[in-house]
Length: 252
Image (cartoon, rainbow, N blue to C red; front, side):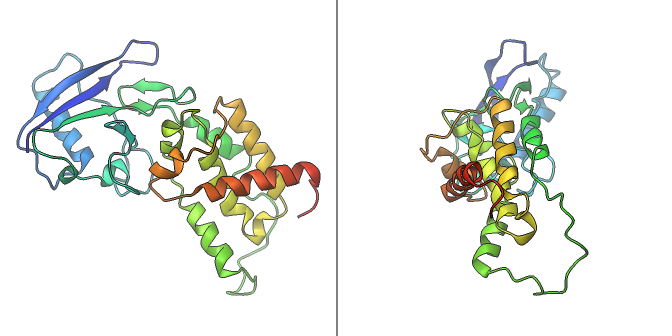
């Protein structure tokens, strides 16, 4: 298949960027989107293109690490639901298609180069409470700590968050509420997370505000593009714990 790529090129956060057009021929429909970008970069290197290869993030290429996110035709991670950029294949597009590729755009995600953005603001939210610091003892025997299946399933669903930033890039307010809610929920639903449950929510929400993320207006763009299917129910849980913690901060 032959495609036309229009890719955002920007040398640094302080430089002015622009869309650049590239044409690729004989691309296999079985290639992943990132493999297609690899082919483009090989072409740019061979041709000694003045802008050099396109910078983009990738690591595991298995939909696990969350580093590969870009906007494809205006949608985070591309046209398929619950699919990361690295798991998107070229068979999702048509021959002769024009594909627009841009970085995740948000005040808190400054552009490093081309499609690569700085998502360390997520790390700062995690540092403020995305862990269990109380002493929980050694590993327990199976079933010695009773956790309902519903709570276990919800905790695991939220733990699936890979921190890709698609929720932020898709939100008109650049809110990190879905990311923060997932990190709060997967700990707050389990017994080990209970002692710090409400202080965790308070600290992580404060970090989110400090990092310049916007507020949530419950329009659902985040849920629609989340590659792991995390829902607005997690945000509702965060809001409930945040308010309850303000009223009765020492009660569970």
